[in-house]
Amino acid sequence: MNKRFQMSIEENKLSRAFLKFIDGDGFDRFLNKIIQGLFFIIVGFGVPYFIYVLISCLF
Image (tube, rainbow, N blue to C red; front, side, top):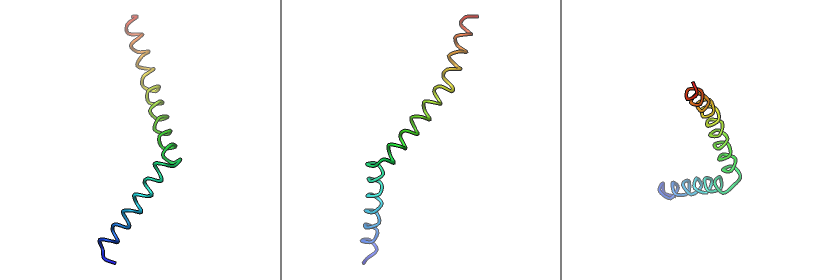
């Protein structure tokens, strides 16, 4: 086998593994973790800032 053909086989294996990850349950779990993290960031920083703005407007 020449080197170019061997690289193409390795790239094909990598592509198949990536597509299997995206098509499978792993990607859903990955997106779920990202959404949970973004939600906690919004709640963690957004709610205290909203309270600060509300208090500064009232006083």
